[in-house]
Length: 326
Image (cartoon, rainbow, N blue to C red; front, top):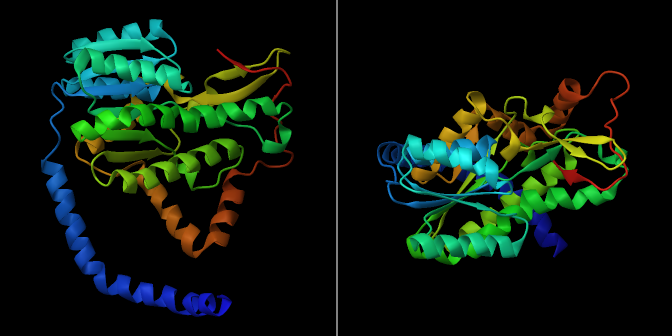
């Protein structure tokens, strides 16, 4: 077996590069034709039913407004119902045909089953499921004094997407609908002080890439990835019982009025309605993929130079009490 692997290691990479080089013109032509087709033809969302999780503010709120402009029927989900009321009123004013709001926690399967079932009872279908809930951090891994905060990142960034998808998938199959996922460039680009967030996002992307093959085209999947958006990293906190705090970002709690958040939301909805598999904002981050594949040493060196703090690093204020979201 080791001999076979040695032969394949020597043969497969150069042979693949030769095949890619020969087929590159045809691939470019096909991709260009596909891009032109999707640029002129977009899914008509009028009277289509869209479930948006994490819709109380931030990216989720702006996505709700974009779907409202397309006269969709909206089902807005968040933990805090009072925040959804304002979003609902504005979405109706913009053009949403109908808006249903429900308070629910996406990390609880029962809550997800409840809001999906109520959507079916009210409207009889689900066409798009948009998962926007996300939670990040800005601390060094070794500085964490309370490991009980670790499950929160996996719960919100991973299970908070998986549970709604699991419950809604049978209905999305019936409507040939689409799942829209809010990922991040950190899923493949290493950045300091974001180890748990990056790991959860990488797991999320891998899950939906695998699910794409399982649904076999019956349900579309759009994976949206973003880089740095505004000042989201400095907004919001985990408050701990002993008075310390841990910096975090929860994208559904970020003020999303104007600027990059609004632009990102427009790209997501436009890409989803055109059937795109991926939406990237901004696109220039893709250049780092080439460095990661062909010159990882240069990428690591550059990131260390650009992102590593000078001198002694700042210590995150991570306490030892039980964290509660505020």
